[in-house]
Length: 202
Image (cartoon, rainbow, N blue to C red):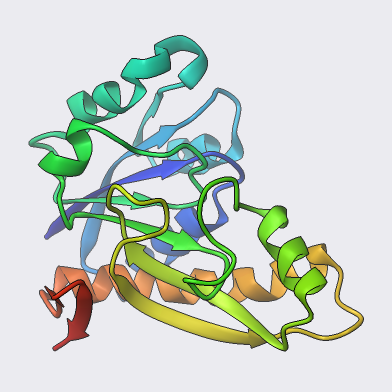
């Protein structure tokens, strides 16, 4: 059974989608721990309610050693790290130790509207201001380049002229909640392989 650690920075709706998929028998994995980027985020409450171990690793406390602390907690205990609305950038040894074993969900169709400082509502605001007709979400592997790892899955949503960033975020989130568990399921079944920087689903 695939063992995962989920990293979160907010309400944890993507975490909940993983929990629900496991409970429904659609996902053969175990959430070993949830690591929050700060105290009092609702994602930690969701984990505690399910009896999942929780940790807080805040940049305020750990500063430059934040990623080392996360590595200390996860090394040898999990097979996959899932960034589910986690806003800090992972760097250093954790990227080497968990090469091709960290995935992230981003609220746009990468390579559009991604990269440094593009997260949350900022993404949806940029999408609306650009006038594009479609957006969506992307599950990808994490590497040294922000939002630059190999793409695993994408899902598309329409963008309407009347959309606000909040309305678009809600529409994209509905797709995120299906796409992230689906990606984890494919990985748990060894169906994802990376060839020349691209993924092939077997």
